[in-house]
Structures are given as C-alpha cells and as structure tokens.
Length: 132
Image (cartoon, rainbow, N blue to C red; front, top):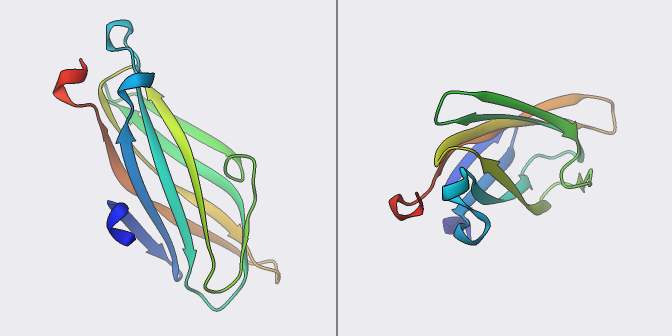
C-alpha cells in the first residue's frame, strides 16, 4: 500500500505519507484556476500515544508567492493515534498557477503534555501540460 504514497517524511517515529493528484474536473485553466487533491496517511510508529493538535502548511505557487495556512487539526478532526495506529484523510489545494509546492508540519501532543513537531514532506503540485 505504501507505493500509493509518492512522498514521505518520518519524525520521531511518526511517518507522514502523501499522494497527490491533479483534478482536471475541478480546474479551470482558462480562468486561472488549478486544483489538486492530496491523500495523507499519518502512521504512529512510536511507542507512545499522540494526538494531532494543529497543522502548518507552506504553499508556494509558480510565481513564488507563499501562503502560510495554520489551523486546528485536519479536516475538522484531532485524531488520537496509539502506537501502531494510522490516520488517513483527503483534502485539496487550489492555485492560480499550473504548478506549485506544499510542505509543512503537524503539532502533536502526548498525554504527558509533550509537544512534537512532525514534518509533512515537500511535494510538488504540477498540472499536466494539456491542462493549460
């Protein structure tokens, strides 16, 4: 199943895997709008329970414009992952250019009150040449 995910990063035995796909049916190049969907799997390979508290994204478009996005949880959830558990979610990213990049980090907490910053791997957003 890991072949599905093109990009991965591991921090403190917590893996973040990303699969990204361009969605032509949600994109309108003639109007300067391109859209990607990304599937993220977070795997807790550590020996402690962690809870995802927040996310920080750095989204860069083809013009070099950077947008920072911070928020609580992921898609309205703050999942708790026991050792060996994983959490999957799907979200999307619109851009006004046919390519760009995303990267960032999640902040997790432990029941003991420790905070962990877990890296989200850098991944490209690239529309096919036929999409504008």
